[in-house]
Length: 314
Image (cartoon, rainbow, N blue to C red; front, side, top):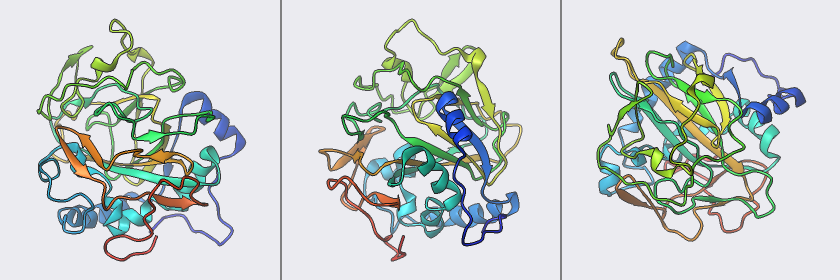
C-alpha cells in the first residue's frame, strides 16, 4: 500500500537534527506515505465506506446525523484502512521520536473543504476544551509539554487554491487563547467573515472569543502555506498557530484532510466524562477507546480499544 520498499529492519525515526527542527518551528514535513495514485484509489474506497455509519462508535444523535464536525470523529474505529493508517510505521516511528516509546492515538477527524468554503480561522489547541470548556486531554502534572501531536494527511491534493493548511512557525510554545472560556456556537457551519481580507470561520464558532488579549491578532505576515500532494502527511503540535486557506472554487473537487492525534500513553483522555459535547450536540463515549500504537498504556483510566467493531485487530 506504499511506494516505499520496506525490509524488516526499515524504520522511519526522525534524526536528532529533525527532532530539534520540529521543536524549534513546531512542525516537520511533509513526508510521503502513499503515491498519489494509491491515495486516490484508497480515498475512493474509504469515501464510500464512510457513508455507512452502522458500525461507527457515535450513533443515534442529532449532532452525528447532521453535518456538524463531530460526525467526522474517530472513523478509524470502524473503517479498516483508517485503522491501519493510524498505525503505519512511517507515521508512528516519527511521532514516537518526539513523544517517546509509549504512544496512543486518541482521536481522528476528517477535514473536508468543499468548493467555495471559507478558510479555517487561526487557532491553537492545548487541552481541546475550546468548544465545550472542559479539557479533553490532561497531561501529567510534571509534563514538559501539552497539547497533542497532529498528523495531517492529504487524502487529496492540498493547494493554496483548494484550502491547504497554513502555519505560523515557532508559535507553539505560547498560548494566545484561553480554552477555559466557552465559545458561542452559532448553529451555522459557514459562520465566516473576512479577517485581514480572507474569508475565515471555525465550524460555527468564532475562535477570537478565546483570545487572552482581545486586541491581539496573529501575525499573518509570518505564515507559510503547506502545499501537499495526495498521500503526503505533515506533523505539528496542536499548539502551533494554524489555519487553512479558503477553497477558491476554481476546481469542483473537494480538499480532504485526515487528522490523527497522538499523545504519550500517560495522558488522560476525556477525564471524568462520558460524553463529548461540541457543535451544538453531544455523543456518548460508551463505545469509544484509545488505540495504543506504540509501547504500552500508562494511564489506567484510559479505556483501550483492541479491535474495531468490524472485528479487525489493531
